Image 1 (cartoon, helix red, strand yellow):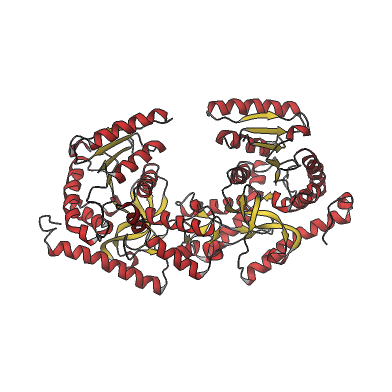
Image 2 (cartoon, one colour):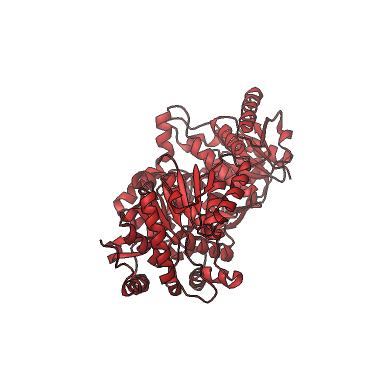
Length: 318
Length: 322
């Protein structure tokens, strides 16, 4: 990984915030922004490049005029897609975003054939699966943003409740990045002690509910999805890969027998390093959590099934 | 608000603490107080110049006398004779108790509002001595122990695991000595319990290595003890106070009934912020852990008792609760 180049497809709020955060952190040498809307990527990239004047470690930020300019990237972040609006469910987004992803990913496959793809488009787990199917790449090179964001939302809830700085909280949210996500606050340590030592069972349930509702809460106020949290979470994943830090981050990945499932993408704790997903950590789940995980997987499979029924994968052969 | 931290002791430990603070720009001023003023001045100049290279604002200067501690928000006591090979922490007891006592009295006079971080060994007893001789409320007297022990435990976990660096949350309670109480049941890697990653034999090995962590380095160095990890652990506490982070760290604090003990210092999880120890966290311990903690407290108590017997505390103004 020598050129430390990151492509970001979709220069909307999430993609642009990810680019800006990365450039402020000085994580990569070069960022290329692409957006289907004319001028957006160009304008934002110039703005960010100028902000870099104050950075001690300036990142080169440019706009891709054409999708084929996302070339020779180490990582490509896919944020393209229609955003979720007020009462729109993730399922509504399914077909329209799957088609967008198909086009984007086909371009990446051609122009950045060695990249690792971080998928951010919703419904996240299904889009990550689509990315895998369309590229046909190894499982370790396809990663969906899920736990990095949901975990930060959980950490926020923990800090709100306990007053203890929760930057130390882990990112243990597994399952789908949607209605059936499974926050595991009872496994988290805040500071050097387990959260179970700090709060009651009822409070723990409250944290789980509010974490699950974290995205929708922002949509309710803003009328559209949040982007600061997602932007920073993406930067966290990019950093782990480029720095080969072998950091554990819950992410949506293609399972191959782990947790008893295969041929589906779902959130589990994984080790992220230079090769992408370097290891899938199999937590010892209790029966109750196993049931929740099964429901989560089922909901993702339903999304995949809808795509199958509409012959979405028909044109590609594996 | 100009923030000021005094570091007492210009040996490897004190110097490294000051250097880390200067490199991070944690405070505006670091005062180095050592017996050899020229050495303190030389190191202060060197660090001030390094701060400029790092484009940080911290100025390091040497104290000419105890009055230069005035206005410090935090005073770190690293002074004391180092542990040499074959010497156990207990050997250092009386020698270092006298040193910590004299600095505590200086702090009381010249920096009466400071928060004191004690790192001299044997740690828990020295923290107790500082508590008694400064006469400060217990919230302002902290011993650095648990952060270092937890860091060592995390290191041995990472060494075995090969991933998850920076995400390991290890918990160590009790005294900073041979009776420390590592708590593998409360130890996680990004939330994953180490019991999901290691078998009980491997965990036992990690615990053994952690307990031996300090001695291992003493043996290797041949002359003196570790200071990089101890200094960083101390800087973590300084940052927690100056930035009012309210993070939970295991620290040696004076107990007043917590975990069933009073008038003694031991390592417990505490929330650290601008006021020092803002809250002591009482964890639910299992029977075995309770027994180990008891054992740990008893070993600290023994040393405190031996200081009492030697008449060390006879001139102490602070009423003894015992």
